Image (cartoon, rainbow, N blue to C red; front, side, top):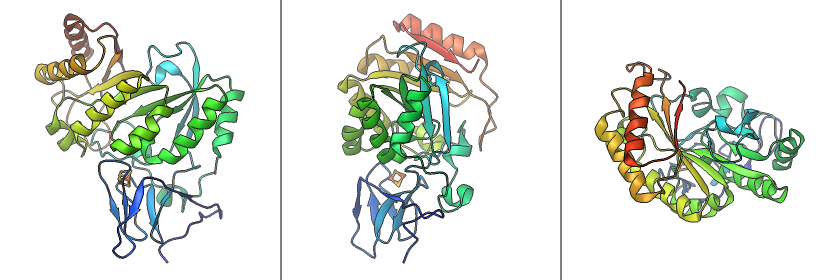
Length: 305
Ligand code: SF4
């Protein structure tokens, strides 16, 4: 026996999708994101919320949101999707990257077993999420706060019900997802703000533990599907704010996405494990905006200043 399929309140954990048996000693391999975690019995993957219980993969986050809030849609940030409306926002624990500068680490590094006691956060059915969104006058449901890819099953079930109730769906994500799951999940999303943290493989490797190339593939795939797309870049002094990195970022966007794509450049505040850089001066963001305008971009938005 390697763990229980029930939480501390005797509510079953939800079986995951996008995994396979490894065949050796009840290991499972999660195929949801490019990490392809090989998970031993009783263990969880890198994200901390997908567990091997008795040789099968379960989602600890399904039905167990730890953040529910009504936000202006501009706060996601989305500048050009249903402006002036409210969005019903949901987050859980867990993330499949490990950004040393994470601005939301209490959720991304949070764990059900440590913080909630064997996944005993209140269970909220997808139907209840949609009901709360409708009651509160929201026009959309947003998958946000932590990384929604790691709770893909919950996201998919909520998104399908939301569409049936004429609610739009929004995803705020690092775009670090494998191709096959992306092809199934992204069509369920009406608007996405993807975090493109810097156009440098070295930056991704050293600061996030992920690969830029996988992120770029997801952004191109979503764009080809026709969903509303905006990008956010958290600008960190000395790490991803050099003219060369900004130039590479803008050149990639210009080559792969419409020039009208809304681009958000946000100021960084020292957080989590990374405190060596100062907060981003507004002058840096202003300089980036001028560079982007000169390059022909038409929708520039500065955040956290
Ligand atoms: S979603 Fe989580 S468990 Fe699955 S491969 Fe990615 S980090 Fe590993």
